[in-house]
Image 1 (cartoon, rainbow, N blue to C red):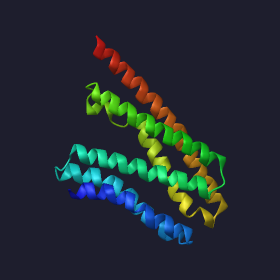
Image 2 (image 1 turned 120 degrees about the vertical axis):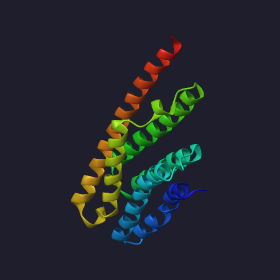
Image 3 (image 1 turned 30 degrees about the vertical axis):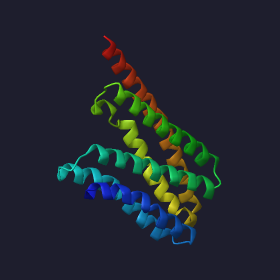
Length: 181
């Protein structure tokens, strides 16, 4: 197991102190560890490329860690913050992640290249908005305005999540049609 893969796995384990610290009212500490976890999301891929340690296992671990990290935080936020927008966002984002995951597996089995399955602009924007929104939730209890901003950021990320799904679907259908001819 190489260092970039350990960083990916650490993201999952960092959920435990993040949520415990939040539940005990250590909002800033929870935010600091959350930011650390977000940095591991950048570092694992960067270091894998830089150190020439890119592997299929590493790519899958990174993807799995991202999905688990975000899904657990969204479910937690649904439980902790009384907001229909968070509930809807959680449903949209997790549904999109499951759909994209299964579509990726299907298209990889059909011989599509990894490049055709890379994230797109909407996916990257969705992730950025999600990360800022979820991060703001950790200090949301200190300010109703901050909580509201966080909720709207998460909802907007959910909208971009669906746009990303549409964009992937069009791209994959187009490539599928090209393969037939």
